[in-house]
Length: 320
Image 1 (cartoon, rainbow, N blue to C red):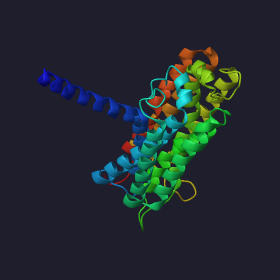
Image 2 (cartoon, rainbow, N blue to C red):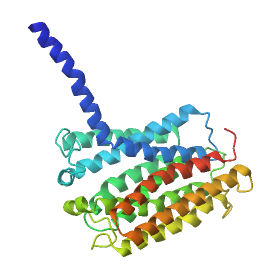
Image 3 (cartoon, rainbow, N blue to C red):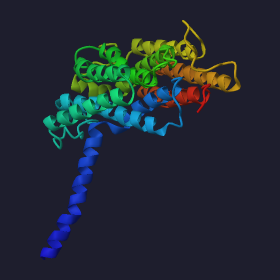
Image 4 (cartoon, rainbow, N blue to C red):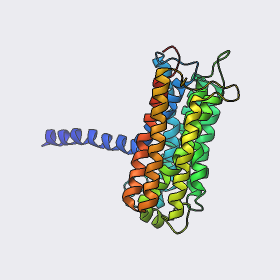
């Protein structure tokens, strides 16, 4: 009997550990964090001074990015634990469900955030560390509480949402290298504008849950409206010329890609097609005014970013 009891305890321990690990991964919104860090890493590789072959630096950036992004997401869940408990989509999150205390979530977040910022400073440079710290603060302590007060939260949240591109680009700055901000700012603008149709589509689909929680993420206080759909069309349309800036040298800055090469032309075509595709999906939302069309915009936006970033990287003119 004693032996059976020992075996039973031994068998349940890994299960509890697995649940704990899963909860902390959920606390950091690991899948979302991975997506955010992906854009940071690609932007780093697009920076003129970096090499794809330098695997150690890529891993360092990936880890530091996950720490900072995960910390911001953990603070978000700690602060919104009562709100998350009201929504079906988020009620099972570890802090909202009581599996991780608010205090433990904040301790985990602060430790992770500090480690991530220190890594950015030590492994890369001060600029990337400062932007990382500011982005984390802006997301956790300005955007998060603002969601219940005004739809301007989407505008505010678009800054920390786009900073990963700038952080990755700036992380590639080295003494005596090509440290122009132009390419990083173009990448920042692409991801900045992308977030408006992306988040409005999510808010459209989850309008019932968001209303119950008191979130104000759609531009109209009347919920999903023609005005909201038209704004999504406008921001998607703005993405077209901004995407083309990746191929145009302005203000002495070097373009990300040379549209004169075959690889550059293919990259140009892919970016243009992706931008026009987003416009078409937003127009469909304006015409149909339904959740199905909003979901199309949402999923299209998920596909848009990795395709555009990889297209730009595939045609970059540098030694790998």
